[in-house]
Image (cartoon, rainbow, N blue to C red):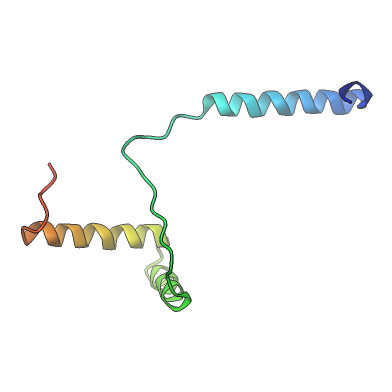
Length: 86
């Protein structure tokens, strides 16, 4: 099938494939220090209010949620319910 493609298209495909390959090779591996959280069962109302709260503070939802999580963890550490991380 490749031999039936017009020469200009072949050149473009070859360049595109090389660019994609180079991008994959150049991307750094994810850091071990980060992770992902998926929240399920969040009501639409809560999600809407979360987005509105982030917009009111001109921040991303991610930044707002991380601040809330870190604040709660620090509170539990102060109360002695969680060990403090150095």
